[in-house]
Length: 297
Image (cartoon, rainbow, N blue to C red):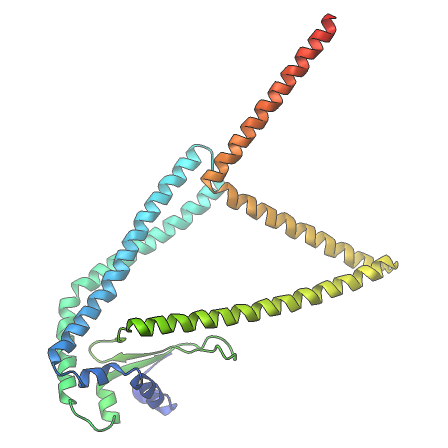
């Protein structure tokens, strides 16, 4: 959802959002308190470069990884270690990812070329900072000068206590600048995310356990009725058993496909099969030899 500052204000979002950011503290508060306004320019320029450099390097590394994966895929397919169906599926996935990465790298390179142009925008923002160097309180005109728009994302987590909602503030001239976190803040954030993830996982485990118990109880009741001669229960229990067998076959097939897509595992299986064939061949040779001796006698 995109909205201007004034639109957000209408729904009581603006000051809550800004005051939340104020506790961080917000970008413009940090800038207001900077003794050297040149530091503001350096912060923003460094931020612009980092925003481009890191994802660009990651995309290029992934491209190299994909090249190696595709090379290995061709080798395994040529040597007969990988079924054609799996080869085609993986090639399609890798090709799609490569195309997306090529587009992403091109966009980042274009963004790099625009950094010098953005420096002009940064200068405008610095002049705005100087304009509001000293202030007693945040006012609506100040916020309108600084904020271009507020983007409110869809809430996640439903109506649980894990519900979160991302709110992005876009500043005039510099866009969605987020003040880099300190190491302590990053560590605290990671710890909190890990704690929440563990809580969610624990709730899922408990829910899954209850569902399994309920399902097993219902199955036991149907089984008891079937053993007592209830024809309807017998048919239902038979369907349950058949569904279980089908699920087991699907899981076994999926595991086999995953294992066979691993070159090392496939090589081991081929070696095992070769040894088994050799043993069978020797057994047949011994049996033939014994038969000939018996006939000769």
